[in-house]
Length: 191
Image 1 (tube, rainbow, N blue to C red):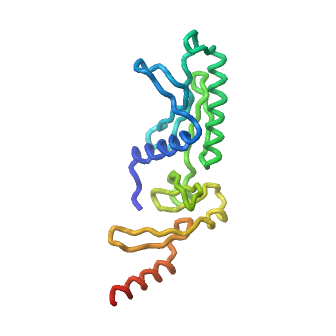
Image 2 (image 1 turned 30 degrees about the vertical axis):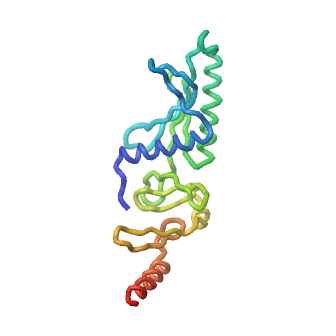
Image 3 (image 1 turned 120 degrees about the vertical axis):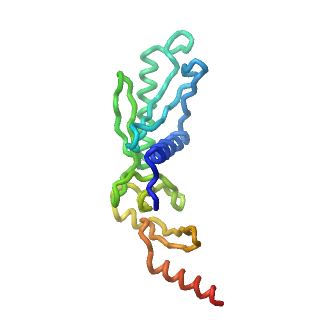
């Protein structure tokens, strides 16, 4: 496995959070003057190299044209940021609520790989949400419970030379299954 560069990892984590939020919530839209034309979430990388994402909610500016009061906008922001936090936590993200200039937002991150402490990226395994470390390939449910991770289904990967390696669900190499597969492949080559 190769370790992704810092900007690539930051962007991958941000894209994964955005994709999850889009399953239930609209993204904020802006007009040509950069004013909010449709309320929704904003999602973008946090500090460079942190593999964290900042998530917030933007409403139309309160006033006669939008029909919103400042209290309405603050209440909408609070309710929807809380809904974003609930959705992210339900899918294994670590969520921290922060306030900046009296506005509520979230600083979120993925679970860290227990082997190399690198941020994991989300993936779907057999229809279930899991996490995979881009540095070492380890997969986890992100719960911290090692017994949960043992129940992930096995999988295989083919390298650039065509060699197939079989992995246990957690991402550890299944030496017996890989050796058995290799011996079957070499028997076919001799025939």
